Amino acid sequence: MTTKTQSQTGAYIFTSESVSEGHPDKIADQISDAILDAYLKQDPQAKVAAECLITTGRLIIAGEITSNAKVDAAGLAREVTRNIGYTHESIGFNCDTAVIENLLHTQSAEINHSVLDGGAGDQGIMFGYATDETKELMPMPILIAHQLMARQALLRKEGHLPWLLPDAKSQVSIRYQNEVPISIDNIVLSTQHLPDISQDEIRSQVIKQIIEPVIGRYFSVHDTEYIINPSGSFTVGGPHGDTGLTGRKIIVDTYGGSCPHGGGAFSGKDPSKVDRSAAYAARYVAKHIVAAGLAKRCTIQLSYAIGRAEPTALYVNTFQTGTIADETLTKILREIFDLTPNAIRDTLGLCKPIYLQIAAYGHFGKEYLPWEKVNDEVLTKLKNYQ
Image 1 (cartoon, rainbow, N blue to C red):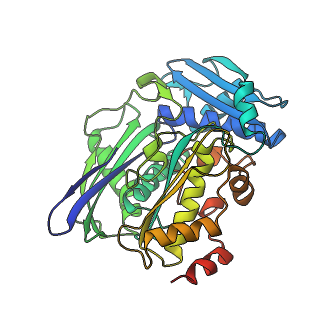
Image 2: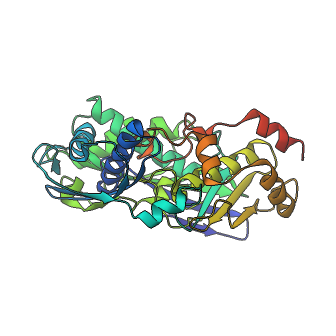
Image 3: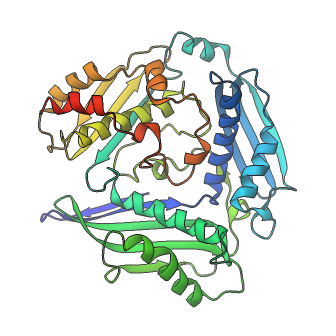
């Protein structure tokens, strides 16, 4: 979720949110991607669409698979929830005693046929975005929101704040002046906790140990409003507090609302699904444009038809920050980048078990991911057009 208010002076506040790995929707995403990784490890050409619903004491796994690989989906689900920290009903889920129903079945032959010759696995529109406001070329609000949630998990798992529990959410509001972030207006952080801790202590420790070490990398910590557990006590969380579904945090997964989203989710889908692979490709293209100095920020849209390899359209918007016209840039990108599904998978190495590690805290802005790495040869070609 995001909000944006703007005045005629060019000043506005933009808000993005993130959730922890223990949020019910993120649990579902991680289980789905763990299943995908297990299939790809045995069969890089596996066709997988795995989705989960998780609630009190129960997990349902459903979807379609085309592969000869043998995967213990239920066992993986228990391992994922255990690693997150859901080991007892009092926390919100017990990985050892929960009932798990596996409803995975064979993929439609018609859908499978559509991708055999390199066509897209479905129609769809995908967006990518990059901005020079951070070194990661990511929007600052979503980047900080993810960092807060990652630090909450780190302190919880390392035992520094033993009263922390897995479920948490963050919301970061950044003040901009003429499209440049100048301060953090406010931060909302809600975290599940053990019952024998006061809200005053939670507030003090969350600010001191989670928030200030993160935001201190960017701005002074003295001018920010902190809103900690605004609803009060938060002891009931996880799947017992709220049902989780795969693919329900698509704005958290992408750019925090700074960029449009086509609607397709990522987790549990193999890279023949352009919902996933083309979104990564669009980020790859947008990042190269900004890294090459051709624009300060850029949105890329790709669209596909099921069974067809070439994109049906490529849209570029540099928000009047480009050094060359968007129309000209569009033609250049068509010459430089092969955006067919097979080429995307080969260029970015997507048929590997890399997806569980990105199912939480965002799919973009992590430098070790292949779609985040800048190719020097491509960069040189783009710079020649300046």
